[in-house]
Length: 217
Image (cartoon, rainbow, N blue to C red; front, side):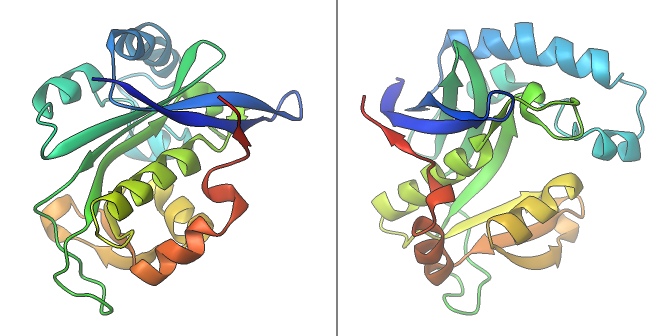
């Protein structure tokens, strides 16, 4: 079931002003069709299947092969997984899948403590610097990440978050959101593992960028 969590402002880079966007817990057929009819053709046209890994990094399209309809089917158990979407201007602007159990912290402040693990997080291709010449909306990734932090708080996990970042996203998680980089994980395709500690979560939620400007529903 899809539930509306609130309306927040995304910066329209092209217009230079904020636009109201809606954050939802859950995903529906409209979101999946947006992915298939809008996102996938953009990926195919910009980055062909024959593109190398380095070309995908350069184009900010390493996640182009993720099948969100398949993910929604596989990870449909609401006790273990949750999906989030951001909608703005009639289109799905961002998608996120999180795991609510079975992953434990590596952070020295609370080793082995439960946390929320972000399994997948994607923004629409037209919002990505490097993918298009003039990206549309800024703040989609931050809004989805803030939703994961708030879920962690709701689950009494102190805001703790873990994730494995694609190479092109490492700077976003380390430098923009302030997560701790634990380096490559050989058991997870060599991707770098990041965590947001309880203290880092509190600091993140104090920043205006954590949720954007809130709008009245």
